[in-house]
Image (cartoon, rainbow, N blue to C red; front, side, top):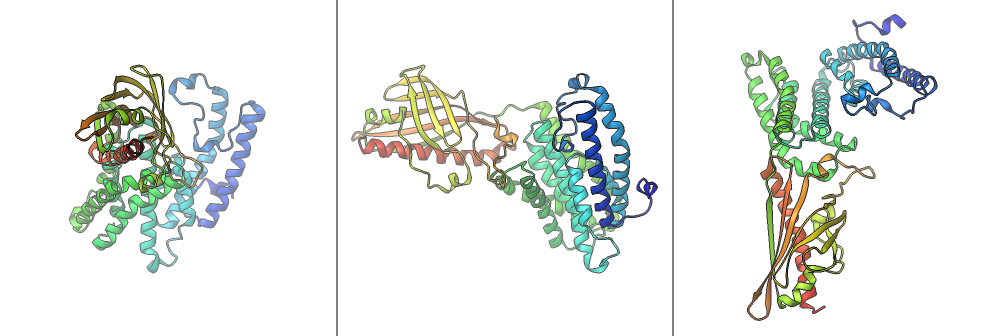
Length: 445
């Protein structure tokens, strides 16, 4: 019985795979706890397997870590790793998926997802005629979700890169690989393949939401870019597999596609392109002279709750503005739903121009999520307001043309696509403020 756990040949049912896995997990958890807490007196994290390195964030910290503790953990982990890999190899063979997927067993977080899916997949002999499409789709989903997780973790956590590698290269490769796997025999219709390529971005998106790595808002904004690119990748894969001779050498193509998104991400990380400074201007005409408008520009009372649909999605919106002092050097504080913008005044030309820098930015949005809160890396200093101004121009008849301008940068690429979103959002923010100022000035408050 014990010897069979280490065997690489043969197959194993999903029931036995699940029961054996649970028993081994309980045993290893207990052994690791006793070793860490009782023997070495170190603190214990409730579930350390999601982040095996724990407090080791950089390689230099390896020298400061308790090497005896680490060596003991590694030594005890080796037989469990062998058994887990062997059982996963046999379960993959039993489920009819390529045994090479055993490599996913060694990837943190992804290995839990891999194990869960292997526990759900039926044996290949069961309902073979009716389950072929579902089995191939499940295999494609497993592989694609695992690849997506690995690349997203690399880009967002390690390289902190939200660029062409993540938003362009990855969707194309996901669509290509999903169809390549699903249509391995070359006889699936183009419509079915396009459906599978669509799932290649939808399924990882749901998984990212479920694992609290992303919120619904950002996933929804990325979908119009990712979905057509996944279709493109799927169409290319289908056209290749539709010709028998062209299916030779697919293994090399798969390897290149797996490596391509990380390679693009790493290149972007090394090059670190300078984000452009973008200006957004919005204006309104007010039936009041500049002198009356000015005081509402400098600071304004609390705005009513927003009715615009965009602010119902979690996008930050302005609430009020206050100022400390007057003239250049005064500090303007514009409160948003996610926190304050701190705005030191640079130009105070009453009643014509108020220009300010921005030294502190709140989060641009609060993500929709099943959890209390998620904080993806792209919400931290990836959309940064640099400066802003209000310009007042006197019009005939005692009226005022008020123009608000914001200058900002973002580190999301392709810049043109994400600028369309950010410009739209900033215009809505400007309009909310300018319409409020117009109402106050025209009411003579």
